[in-house]
Image 1 (spheres, rainbow, N blue to C red):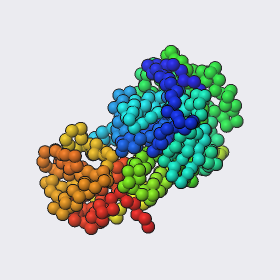
Image 2 (cartoon, helix red, strand yellow):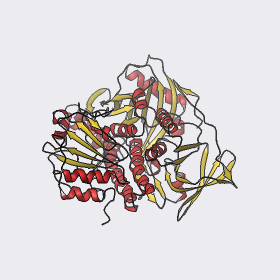
Image 3 (tube, rainbow, N blue to C red):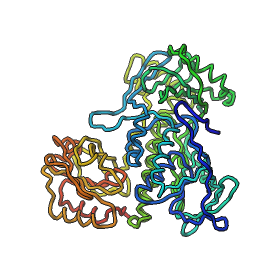
Image 4 (cartoon, rainbow, N blue to C red):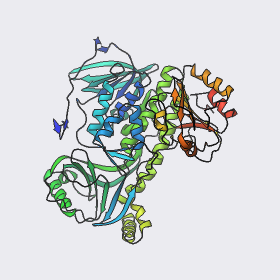
Amino acid sequence: MQAPERIGPFVYQHHPVQLPALIDGHDAQRHRVAIAGGGPVGLAAALSLAAWGIPSVVLEADTTVCDGSRAICISRRSLEILQQLGALEAHLAKGLPWQGGRTFHGTEEILHFTMPDDENQKLPPMINIQQYWIEQFLVDAAQRHADLIEIRWGTELTGFEQRDDGLRLRARAGATDYLLDADWMIACDGGQSFVRKSLGLKLEGTAFDGKYVIVDIELPSPYPTERRAWFDPPSNPGSTVLMHKQPDDLWRVDYQIPDDADLDEAMKPENVAAFVQRHLDMIGEGRLPWRIVWISAYRAGAMTLERYRHGRIFFAGNAAHAMPIFGVRGLNSGFDDAYNLGWKLAAVLRGWGDEALLASYDDERLHAFRMNAASAIQSTEFMAPPSRGFSLMREAAITLAHHHPAIAELANPRQTSVITYDRSPLNMSSDPLTAGPVPGAALAECPVHGPGEIAHVTDLMGPYWSVLVFSAAAWLDPQLDALLREREKEAVPFRTFVLAGTGRPAGDAHRVLVLDEGSRAARIYGAEGGAIYLVRPDGHVAGRWLRQDAPGLRAALARLARPRQD
């Protein structure tokens, strides 16, 4: 679909098709990584690699960012990733933060839910922002890395073959076909992935019968930003409706239609407009001026490839898996895919990682899919019951929810949350602590005082392995200090952060003193008596130890960045 010229204040920039320098129909340059698809996941993958100095070429068939709102909910974890990709501030400035929502049966509220949030957090649980803004902000970030990221707009991948030392790709830019070579390829080309189909691969899992029409409307409503859901409302009897506020007075409305309904007929503008007017009348906003901006549709499914790596090709985002929208796990999972893969592939390309490190991408992200799918399926079966039995169960639960708040929790959408890789091959033998993130878990957030812009624990993340040393008086065991300094001289990117209850924040290129005022972070991390955390470049804990002379810590540092081979 051709994108419009403008949606509210958003102006589409159509990029010219550019050809590389060709020698006999062949790109004169060999590429380290080719990325199929320049949507949010492909751009995130390119930015993740660029953080490590790894160049990539992005092949995008369109000449501009996407049309329509598409994925609109960005989780706190994804915002942390966007911070590392250099695109956080633009998203925060434009997006609408929210932390809860309401569920109605008919017109009566039966549930008001809130997502986890407290004074320790730097970022909101969720922001709403249209996908075209997301893609544009990522394009802007990529342009700041023009020496490492080349986006080839209007360039379609038409074929490829794998070789022992890489891949040969066929591309079409305008009327010109040409070949290009790459060491690796990341397939981020969406739900209809050309790469996936070319390899004869299929997504396997659960497909649901429920059909939904999606419509963006421009509506100057002052209603606050929160997720609203209706079961059996007068505007859509027997079915469900979802409503989300977006920037620029746009509202996203998703409404279920009967399984046997003609989708093309349901998506006709006059039929969509009739529904929207009924729904706005129902919620008391029917007198406000409104107009349709975009119409689409979807069917829910929780499906995945059996493996995400096939030779020198990796799959990420919707090319790798499909998620129902309930709980907003689609794009957020894709960001995690790109960020998880980026540092591992960079490690191999820079020579301090091995094949087992790449294998952990499959291990961890397939585990993430299973965890996400389990919650998403529960939400989907409640939102769009797959059988008469499920429908009867939902009707009974909703009826009881009017008088029993605990039962109303069945209607909680179970929003996406950070995945713990508790069985990752990268986890290291560790000591039990009374609190804090376990091996495989992401860092717990907490305010701290550090030099520069360090104000929270997640600000310590970066393109390096980190050692967090909790020490009340900023004391380091001399032998550990010597070992850490030896690690800092090696090729593996590595930094040490000493979190102390006293002292003045300071630091250099490798050693940073961070003030943990009132030992707040130490309590959250179960480290009031001292502890050490070894943290991966993506902010997940690899191991943790109580004592600075722990043999397990020394062993972990000795094989830093090398996963177990057993």
